[in-house]
Length: 101
Figure 1 (cartoon, rainbow, N blue to C red):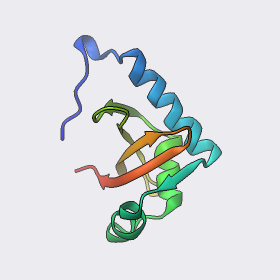
Figure 2: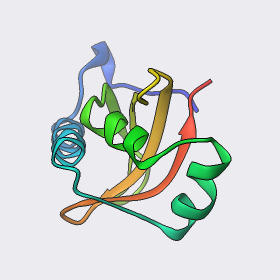
Figure 3: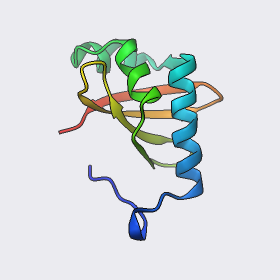
């Protein structure tokens, strides 16, 4: 999936707020994993919760992925680019994690 951005690369106010929330949750380690993320996404990609914390805390970008759902882009501990599909409630509820190709 390609990242889209409004004209001129400007983030919307909701994207700015979501990016702030992602970083806050990553730094404070306030995160819960869905069963899918815990049992499939992370093990299948050889990722740990620490990689997801890193991606959130160091988030570089985010875009809406539906109502109340965000696609957050950030680096794993090994600096591999991840995209974390997340809802904020007020912690980060991680739905799934992908590597970015």
